[in-house]
Each structure stands twice: as structure tokens, then as C-alpha cells.
Length: 349
Image 1 (cartoon, rainbow, N blue to C red):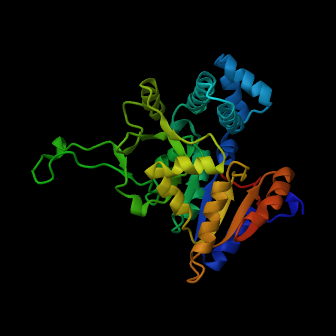
Image 2: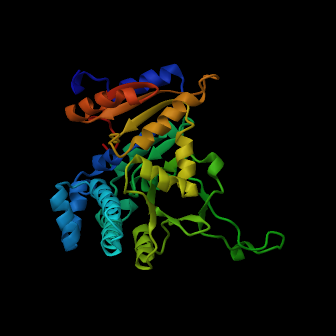
Image 3: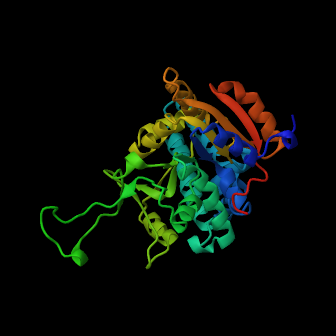
């Protein structure tokens, strides 16, 4: 079958809505590329890294012959293990680890620098189209999951003022609860995760630029009237505070990172427990993302006896190449796999 013969996104929505099942959404890098392919692609990130004049990173990209950051990071991890196996060359291993850490820091800087300056740089028509796309899920008791690190999803939901979009963050009152305080003297904490997690339906599976691990708390930076969100993130970066941001490693290694962070663990476990159907847009299920397939399979098995399980996944494809690739991995899923033509989905139009 060719991509032109696949059902459209509108077709699959009609099918799902007619069945009355819950539907959820998984977003990948294609969601951001659909907004602007010039700034949200690995090619753009690679150009940014080249401009940083880090000679070691330039050589790595050249030797491995790729513009994919995750591939380079995976190669660095592999090389580190190989070097350790040949003897305790601590100096070499240290240099490899430093190169990997530099790549991660530069990737964060690149994502920040390549963003639109602030939320209102997103054109009105793109904002309106995207919030309509997202509300199909969050206004119908669905969950939204994303592996993206950028701010686009956060910005669109914030500007769209969607009351049904809950990311689990909230403020705690800092004054003593049993004492009376005038309204204008009330003190509140930063946005902390956990206060509204039971109602959470927006999940950043690999972290995001606005989410920071403060040790005992997971906090979220936000836009205010004094500072743009990116300015506040930049201030944290200058203090060597970095966002929760998983890039390196294969699926197993990513899952290890996820299990060591309470916020990421919660989001992953939520994916493992969804019921109904999952619609996938802009996520290609690469060889480094088998942990996502694992979560889908857990959800597919979870409610086998009660019938409350994940029945199907609908994967959007953008090219004949991606269509052929998904066909080769379909048997890895423990639920029904359906494909649709993602090229004309009106996410940002």
C-alpha cells in the first residue's frame, strides 16, 4: 500500500468517535517541524552546533556522518563502555563523558536559541488551528503525551487558555495555613509539580525546556509580565541549572533516566495505563524509542480481563519511507496498528 491510499486524519477521527472510545494523542518532533521545519529540525540544530565552534563536537558529527543528536550521544556512550572494557583509562573516559555533557548542554542552548522569541510570535491562525487540534483530546477526557523538549505545546495551551489542559503543576501557600493574612500579603511558592497530578492530562515524557528538577521539587518556569519565558530559562542556564531533558541513550537507557525522576516516572506510567486508542502524530518509533512501544504494550495488556485496555494505535506517516519502516515494526505492538496519511493534518494551518 502507498501513502496516498491510507485513510486521512479526519477519517480516523470519524471512526474513533463513532466507536465512542477514549482517544489519546502522542506527539513527536514532527509536531514542531510541522510548525516550522527551518527551526525545529535536527538539521537546524546541527547548524547551530557548528556555529558554536566546538571542534570536538564537529569532528564527532563528521566521523559518524549524521545530524541526529541521539545517534551521536549513543555512539559516545558505546565508546565510553568500550574504552572502559580495555582498561581503566580514566582520562579518556572522562573526556568522552565531558563531550557527551557538552553536547547535551549545547542541544539545550540550541533549542532555546531557535525558538520564536515568545508565545505571541506564533501567528493567530496557527495558534487557533493547533488548539482546535489539541482540544479534540483534552476536551473529550483524553491524555496528551509528547517527547518534545521545546515550548510550542506549552505556549499553545497557555495562550489558548484551555481549562481542561492540566500539567500537574500548581502553587502552595507559603504563609502559615492557620493564621489570617490579608489577600495582598499572601505568599505562594513557585509552580511545583504534584499538586494537581491526579487530574494531569498533559505529559512531557522526556522532560521539557520549562521543567526543572530542583532536588526535592519539580518546578516549572512560566511567562509573567516582567520576563519572557525564554529569558527566565536563560537565567537558570547561566546559573548552570538545566531542564529535565532526556536525549541520550537507547530505549533501555532512556527508561533508566525516566525511572530516576518522579515526574518522568509518573508520565511514563500514565502512558502505560491508557485505555481506548492512541493517535500518534510526528513520532517515528525509531530504534532508540522502544521504551515507548513497551509502554503501549503494557497498556494493551493491562485491562485484558476487564476490557479496559488500549485496543489500537493510529500512527501518522509522512512519507513512503516512514510507511515502509512502520510496516516492518508493526509486529512489535501488542494491539492493533492502523496507519493514516499525516501529510495534510491541519495542526498549524
